[in-house]
Image (cartoon, rainbow, N blue to C red; front, side, top):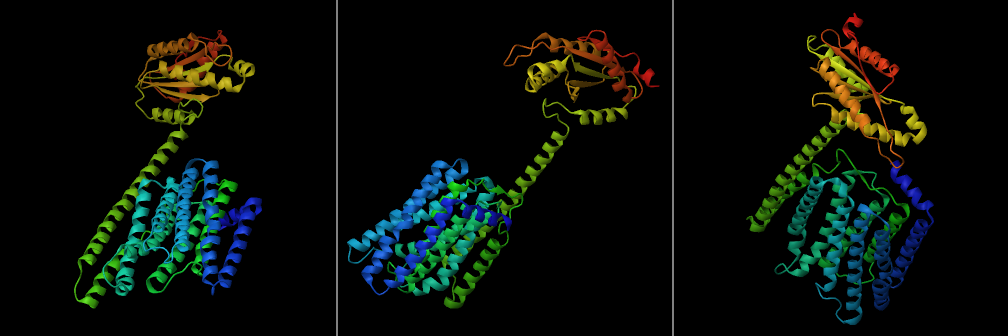
Length: 509
């Protein structure tokens, strides 16, 4: 894709970003080398795994805090939450190191460090959702539910088939904490994929790096969980290198966010969320749970029935959210079409109808009842060029908007007011004979001339000439010509007055 390549080139072209990337890679090489050199030295491995390990983790919350202070809007919320998450991660690592150095048996299982770690994981998921705030409430909810479907399905299968048979005794807090780490990491990846990348385009590089860091952390947590359940974990092992790579990636992401100042991700009209995978996974997991347990134990436990029931309810709610999201999207598209249609027939400066709309309306009147009365008023602001030449076009725009408002205020509910072009306005008056049209024209002329137009400089007195044409019978197309001719006579007669066309239908024939 061209966009990621462009963002990557911008990152490497920026001095501080390039330094952060090179320093991060250099540190990973150094840390990996030290991990290998101290593999046979418990004290050395502890120093590398507990003390040196903290360096990029310390840099992460500092860089995230700087990003939160310098950025605005959605990006500020994202990096503020990530700063809290990275701070909780740092607190957990410091607590773990303290247990390692100050006690002979190491950290208890679970420990206070686990609380900090879980806080960091949950806050990171919330941060990702805040970073993609433009996805819309329904899409956020569906993304979370899709994530939960995948997590519960995979977690239930993994627990039933892999973990539970290896555990002796009942479920305890240690086991819950052990399983929670990879599950929260999977939730992060699902939220990033479904709500973020699936629902948005042009995702900022900094957010992609945060997602990559989450993926690295998820893989590391899975290895860590495997070691805790089936083997033994000690600080300074090779799995820490993967954790360290995740921390370095998070630090680089914060630097990129500050330096590149990328725009927020743009919401896709049709999101590319994993529409089938969550439902398919949940369905297969439900069947597999029942089949595996029936084959291995001959019965179906309450735990399995509860999980299957929750998956079924979640799938139903998820489908409802999917339909509701599509319905909301359809309404947005309809509203956008209506707005485009309105803009197509609206004058951008005054908010009145434009010439196109007036032409269409006159065409419709052409086919209407020819006996039905119809009047047309053509209004031209006198000496408007002098206003532009004296005060400039911005003040001229103020005058046009003010006069448009006065014309509209003088007209009736059924009248159609349009800006015909420049300083010329047209009022189409259905079911209006000549006396009523003449009275309306005089009311408009008086409204325009009655009060000077105010602006930053001296007030400006504006007058208007009005031409009136009425169709007692015959073609509506003749009205515009007749009204223009009447307007010309009003100007010749001295301006600031109303002139009435003489039998426009007779002139047309």
